Amino acid sequence: MRAQLSQETPGPAVSVHIHIDPLPSTEHNMHHLPILIIGAGTWGASTALHLARRGYTNVTVLDAYAQPSAISAGNDVNKIVSFMQSPADDDPDFANRTFFAALSKGFQHDPVFKPHFHEVGSITSAFSPGGLKHIHRRNRPGDEVIELNTPDDFRRAFPEGILTGPLEGWKGYWKKRGAGWVHARHALLAAITEAQRLGVKFITGDPQGAVVRLLFAFSSSGDVIGAETADGQQHLAHRVILAAGANADRFLDFKKQLRPTAWTLAHIRMTPSEAAAYRNLPVLFNADQGFFMEPDADRHELKICDEHPGYCNWVYDDDDPDRGGQPPERRSIPFARHQIPLESADRIRALLRATMPQLADRPFSFARICWCADTVDRNFLIDYHPDYPSLLLAVGASGRGFAHIPSIGGFIVDRLEGRLDERLAATVRWRPELAVDRDWDDTLNRFGGEYRVMDFNESAGVKG
Ligand SMILES: Cc1cc2nc3c(=O)[nH]c(=O)nc-3n(C[C@H](O)[C@H](O)[C@H](O)COP(=O)(O)OP(=O)(O)OC[C@H]3O[C@@H](n4cnc5c(N)ncnc54)[C@H](O)[C@@H]3O)c2cc1C
Image (cartoon, rainbow, N blue to C red; front, side, top):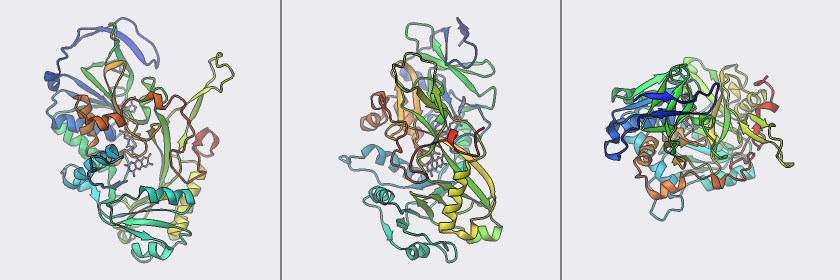
């Protein structure tokens, strides 16, 4: 399909209007029409795989980075996974439980993902009153869990000599089956490799895969018709699926539905014999302090995350003189950095002192800020844009989207085809009405750290 520019907008503008020969748009032949996915991270890779498995033959994925993308939240050694059974029809949490039931099947049966899941069990714990109440609520009926009420209860859940710290005030629940961790990077690469094998084309790296703007039709519809990459190429498509994670909101106005939010992680390197001794540990998550699981088998690195409501990188819009006394609008803008704030490093060491003090003073071999995008209610956002009927949004993973890698693409393709279960569609719909008065500082039921959403501009060691 040929495109002719009617107007070029220099710089990082979000739209350019072009004249194009219209594509035939009957749904029955959509399987062979060009579908463009922006972002080959967790959700983009899953979507590409599910499209290919359903017989779509003309799928292209653009990503600004070589795979696995250095900025994908999914490019990580491990992520926590917990299974759920399918909900009853009248379950008030029907949508989320359905998503979880699907990922559970994926990790149990899908040959692409099954090898990367480690069913070692997981412990969810806390010590603050709020944290304890929260984990109690999260404890799902039907799960077989063992209550852990004392530090010794925790120690007994681990091989001897590992949890030597005081674990003061910790209480929790140990889910021994149907929970554990997935090797995230391996699962992400497995999805990409399988999608490629089935014919999906990946264009990655800067400039050829780096999307600089969406392309809009010049006609009265003004519909989205593709994307332009940093090398000036225009990739036209019948449908565009935006799966750019925390960076999605640089392409269009999400009406405050997305808040790019970051978390922090560090690794410490262990010797091969230490790594062997720490093999098959249950995942240990503490809502007030952070989490870790066993060291990775390739590099013997133990990843530790400090838990907190997240960091934003606020940028204030001071240009509008007509604010009528209102404070300036602000947006959180992601940035990539292999560095974490000093206070975050301190929190990671505090978690180690509470649990495994024998490791607390080791140097970090790696550290990273990792971005995701929070919706206002932490439900996903998977919907067509109301103004651009060919643009499907697959965003808002809300800090919990990796575990869904085996199955989320199937739901995204269901929405693409207009056959997503209506209860699910209602939960993940375009919903700006919920974000009109969005409290950007909402902790969204997260605990730990300073028990508030933090600002990178106020923390030492990362910016400036
Ligand atoms: C520290 C941390 C720990 C987490 N732990 C867990 C966990 O234990 N369990 C869990 O389920 N979830 C976890 N999550 C959340 C999970 O990782 C994310 O929700 C999920 O990976 C998001 O997937 P995504 O596809 O939306 O975004 P990403 O995986 O980040 O993918 C976005 C992609 O878009 C690409 N992109 C961006 N801009 C452009 C552009 N201009 N042009 C082209 N491509 C572009 C990026 O390169 C990237 O590949 C964690 C997140 C963090 C930060």
